[in-house]
Image 1: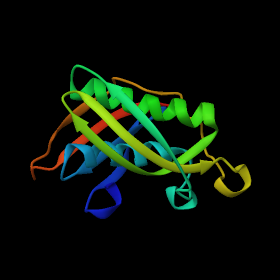
Image 2: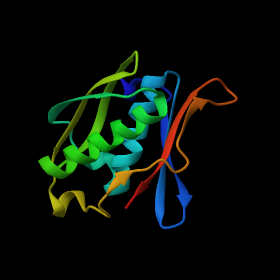
Image 3: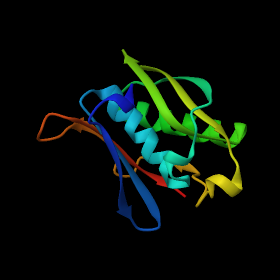
Image 4: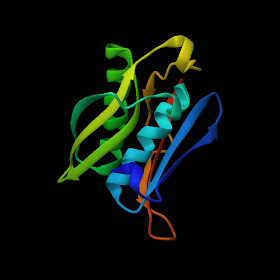
Length: 143
């Protein structure tokens, strides 16, 4: 699980949009941390209780496209279920992603959403190992 290691997430500057980056010891952890970074654009993940689980599945021919599909699947779930997420358990195998995302229904007064994320893009899309051998999964999202 993403919350049991040294993995982290961060945002990076990109004109009017926002870059999300997940870093982890494993590729799955980097994908999970990228999801936390995505959700942190909307609200502080510490405000989101992991009360309900949603299962997601994605498939793509390469890691970069799989990252975009994964983040867009989360954006779709947030929009259609009116939920926010804070915890992720990601499993990757042969171009397929299977994940559970935990969160709760949006409460505007408590969550204080900052922006609505419209979609993950191919801009600055990268999934690779960094100089320390850790996995990095990043792209720019349209807000």
